[in-house]
Image 1 (cartoon, helix red, strand yellow):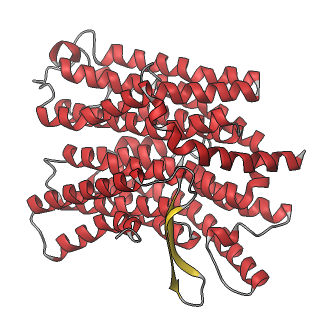
Image 2: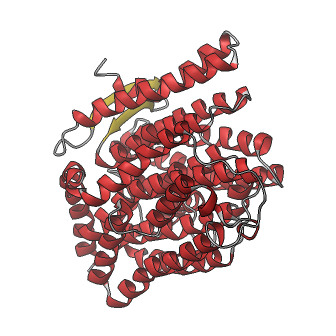
Image 3: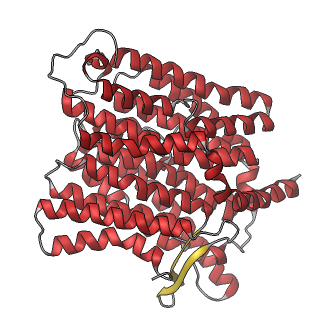
Length: 492
């Protein structure tokens, strides 16, 4: 059991979906099965986190040959970085299933379980081909959910996101295949294990092209500014569960990919081109914030807000100091919790008013005080409300930015100010003032409060008591950062 616990975490949702599909389960049993698999997976992840050794490096490793004579292996493991995202995935699935309680379309439930297997497998994979397969697996359910269950120009937007993502995925696959071939040419055997491929060295020209292959896939997934044209349309057309997964988890996997594979394989190139990426991230901070201020659609507004904060996470990653790195990892977690909450609230708004246009809303606070509290809390958490985890994370990145360069620090600090600007402007028009909608508006039900309350508690605990979490990842984070600092020292 212990040796295979990560395999159970990855495949339990998929096996549940296959079993229910084999017996053509009724929608009631499908709902029960999905919730059971998510809760069971959460308990397994909590057990893994409880037994995780902060000083132990990669743990619960499973390494078995997969396809003979090709070097492809079933190689998985968990460390401080993958543990954070693994916890996020397992924590966010039960609230999403509670949100989907009244959903009667079976495809919704099957796709969500497949999606959980895809994102979990990607985060735990240490073989590059295995990572690529899970990377592609998580794309298929998103494509189906937007194309079949979305709204507006959902079919066009689903094609756009899949074409852009496939373009990035193919560039990454070419890089993976070339690196595997070089390892075979050098050692005499095939391998795609990260531990083996990270021992290779390439000339600067080759490294640049190989790095670009990975970065294109990750930049589209985040998305960094310039690679973002799919983001707002996809968020606007997607059903709420798909939006939550894209913003809270899949976008974070773009950052994870750079952190895990970029620095392991091409640390010299990434360090050399860090100023360019930092500049791109700073442009993204400001550009996305301006677009959020001018957006009237709630989903699209928070899509741009997510883009701004993901640019902030990427910025912290490339500043390469302990404050920025700690803040980036912490913001990965806290931003995921906050965006899950706010997109669920937007979904609940649409269910009641049949619109997410800010100009069509108003006066909600006088009708629904519980709804107003949760909506306001999650929105302000995204903006870095003091007392929430987002405030701690953004403050650490800002300190790290000032440590790196005064003007970078000044520009980074504008994130909090601009976020407060568009959040308060949105809240004033949406929740307060004159009601623009005459619908009979119901406040949150007990089921909906139970669904949202854990997210509120987690955001408050991560903001008030960050010392409960930082010891888990700080030792390994410091060791990883020291390796990058040594690379920087070697370039000077």
